[in-house]
Image (cartoon, rainbow, N blue to C red; front, side):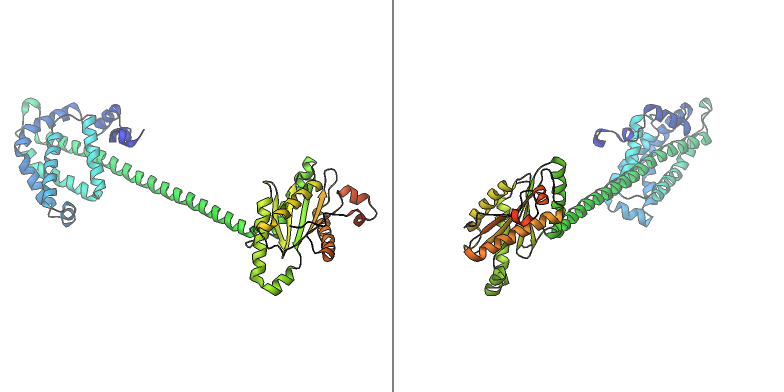
Length: 391
């Protein structure tokens, strides 16, 4: 339940039964209550005088005077003290009385009254009251004398003090809880921020900043994972390996900025064509790889042709590519290095074709690892195809 829907006694789990037990502990017996009620008719006419004397003593303490601050506050406090003293001798010490005392503790804690000042104030209030209690005539018929009256007053003051301190302690525990929660929230947000930054740094360490593609290190991680998944599911996997023809000449003639621009546009071209599960990487320099999970070499050709057909939207028409494609699986599989090597060889085969026709060229490696393994000459199974892949 929300705190604002509970009384202070409810928040502290002070029930009627608990109040009865506490009254017994502090000697608030029926006789004590009767004694306090009997004092009321003598205290009531002197109440303003008692309050005035009490605050004269209180305001003589610099620290207390500073807390009170001004005449209006002193007047309000005097009125509150008047009500407090009348309730003290009223004879009703029930849940309403307890809640009012708890409220006193909360107010004093909130305005910064330290426990030492509060206890010293109660001591001064008792000292101020003592002569007035002593002046009450003894009543033999009720077996009431000065000693019993002073004892009853002391008991009710102790009862009040313990309630006030319950609130003080609860407030401090609540502050500790709030501070702890704030620290935990801060630690949690800091942990999230650190995790976010770590993820960003990890992403940066795995991403080529120029092209936005995965870098060389990330490529090997992705390919190792994709190969393992392909073997586990007995599916084919293809790898496209391509580079930019005469890229060094472009760099030398037009400058590295122009070369970097081309590399960036190749990255955009590649990202625009890959599917959700495909992984595009900058292998290094002007060399790129695209991992195509669950894709045959024929399907990879279609992908390569489509990518080349979209090239003019991103790259100058004079830029040419040499593209090699290798497939492994679904039955037998190349190891990672051999798989990359097959695609690399196919790319260089395509490059050789490009030297004679000045067009984008595509070359296919052996159709599968098992074909390469059963051939006396793996190179003889490299097929040249689509030698006229004009953008």
